[in-house]
Image (tube, rainbow, N blue to C red; front, side, top):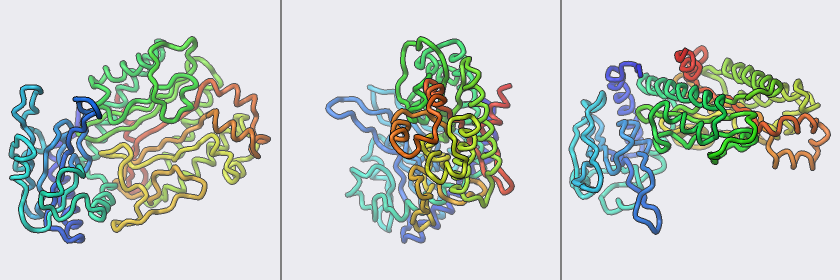
Length: 441
């Protein structure tokens, strides 16, 4: 897969991360930091581990996701040291010492186990530790997972470097390729499981290598926001597909959702209208915009769509004011994206902490900050026909403002979500996802 010149972009990324870390350490009174990739977590009452994924704070420095018990030793003004876990183990294949675009910036020292790491950890001074909370209390660290330091580091992670944007573009290109394969499998009337297999096979990954378990929902399953079932048999009738799935490149995630109608023209029209709403919201993204305002705009636009489609009888402003729009859109408009799918710091008020409040009546919003150049966000408005929310609406004051025959028509299709990943610029945004799909053709 074609990628940008990561070897040219990484040094400036490391310089930026180093400067941010040095400033945070100085503010909190530390003179060093040790980052832990994480350790294996064993299944209770058994003898095998859960799939391993390195901590994001570690991956910010080094794109190593598959090797537990590695450590990065950071002393401001010095080259970072990577203590790389390479055990003498005949049960498993050891990971070879890394040799890539980023490794030249580190002093890399192989270790055999945690005891070897402990010997290589600096003694003296005020060194903080970020990683697994257990097992390090007696290593001599000044603090283990100090919340004020983590908050400072989380706050600045919202702004992505040029290297990080390159990785996110690559993750979107992988995701777009896999989504195209999933759409073909849907057209071939595959099961949810078959569609998921087609998705993963197209980019040669296992499920544990994806940034999150893929949501592959046929028909009414699309109304379950985090649908977790992969039915092995195709349904008697294919009506719709909602697929929410991403891909990873160098530790950075894409998070993409598409919804398809199989043959029904009315549902296809609704999907097309939702795509127009989503693109209108994307057009409103730029530095200086308060995300909370965009979230409320999404409710108004979806309420207009519901009114125009004959699902509700209230006008858009009244639907938002009374909470009727929330029956059909119960989640937030989007979130920060990066090393984590739901990246950290989405509601932080400042590097010192504090939360920017969510709008009243919208408790699920994951992002409340004013957008800045370099932020990467997901844009994912949704419209769903969820049995439990509709039942509550039918029993309450919203009942008279809903056309229940129209609802019954669309309920078998589940719902619609369309999600792109956007890099915020001073004048607008770069749609990483739409550009990735464009390059497929």
